[in-house]
Length: 158
Figure 1 (cartoon, helix red, strand yellow):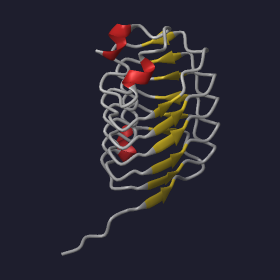
Figure 2: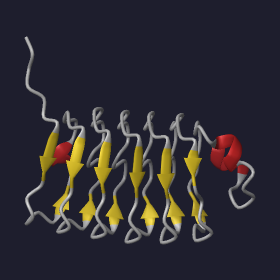
Figure 3: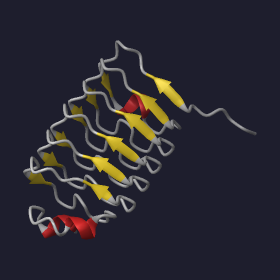
Figure 4: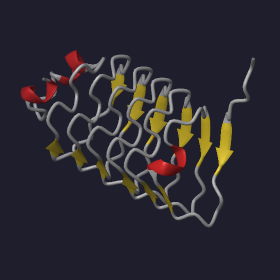
């Protein structure tokens, strides 16, 4: 028997923070976040396996711990310049993530941020990033290229 699957959702404009309890483990492939949202909480989209795309508006200033972890269908994401750090395990195990554009507003990449992103082939590392978390690029598809960047300590790949 075919069960209906939620494929898109638009959040009400009066909601201020999205937390994991609202979205966790839902079958959603597209998500529209209104500009009234300022923070994406811990585990917010974690394990949304069918999420393929998301537009993060410039009103977002915080992306929480494990926010997009295990979003195995997420292919690309643009991070707005309103965000200053990528939290721990933010994109952990995003197996389909092929590219990511990190704005110059980012000054920290958290522990395990891109851990296991085996399809990631394109990532820019702006000079604004002063802090790299442990194992932030472990198992990353562009690990070989990133190892050429002398600003990234070698032990952040293990």
